[in-house]
Image (cartoon, rainbow, N blue to C red; front, side):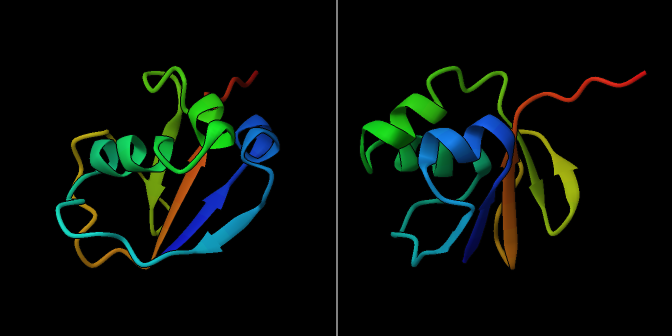
Length: 83
């Protein structure tokens, strides 16, 4: 599965994207974030406040409980502001 990181999430993880084989039992965005945090300090730092990091599955914004089954790409980014 392709993961893409934007803005300060990218800076903290240290890469723009990566392709990973996820272990069994990773079913939702929340599961994925918890697993990513076990991959090293950079991920732990990037996702230290899980409530503010946003996610999109195949370019559709989703909530943490969203299923990742069938996803081709998951993007993570900080909250956006506009005006």
